[in-house]
Amino acid sequence: MADDALIHDPSGGLARLIAIMARLRDPERGCPWDIEQDFATIAPYTIEEAYEVADAIERRDWDELRAELGDLLLQAVFHAQIARDRGLFDIEDVANAISDKMLARHPHVFGDESRDKTVEQQTRDWEEVKAAERAGQGRRGTLDGVALGLPALLRAVKLQKRAARVGFDWPETSQVLDKIAEEIAELQEAAAGAGPDRIEEEFGDLLFVMANLARHMAICPETALRRANAKFTRRFEWIEARLAEAGRRPEDSDLAEMDALWDAAKAEERHRAARAR
Image 1 (cartoon, rainbow, N blue to C red):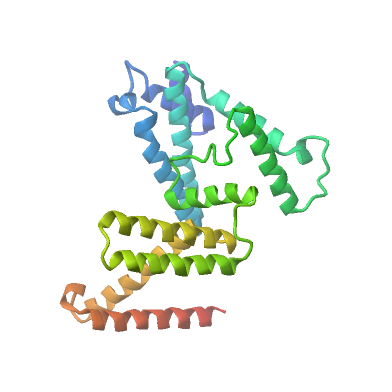
Image 2: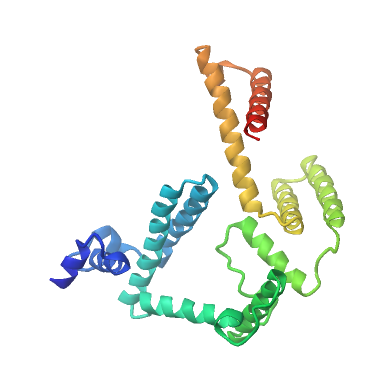
């Protein structure tokens, strides 16, 4: 069959991947697991693959990035095949929709507007076009359309950006820092005697304002936290390695010793960074 030849063609490209997914979802010849999936069951994998793409970029592992982009592309093809099976749309509709959106959002490239704009002006124009699109879809509230499924930290930044567009924002970073101090005091007060719900609420308020600080400082909080996680992992593994050299494990140590080893790990990282300059 024609699709069999395409499926086994190593140079078949995107058409090959689409054919493979169609076969996997085929009720008679496909894979039982793939056939059983729907949008909701696949969504967590889609989110996971997006983060694995970001991780490969963070580590500058370009071979892995190629593989992870393939995994992410598979997710788009999978969702599109589910939609096709239900008579909703297919991958061509997806590609055409995003192509139309790119044309509409780049009139300075594909239309008759001037390209002689700053990046900041182009960003403002982009946001104005998106706002018009939301209005055309009946989304008139400032916060309408900020996806509920986003990671909470990223969604906090998007909510704050939307509110800032209509003037609901602190003009100075120092005011955000003052608010952080206020939220820390409220969290300390709650921790001293409030119930778990109040403590969680105050902790959430603090995280929300920290996300706002990241926005004011032009920092992506997700990226900052990923780097902090990587740094913690790297330094703790250094601690484990030093203890292993003495035939010991972390549970054979204590906080004072591991804290000293942590400081040594920091010092070694600074030394390596200085030599690399």
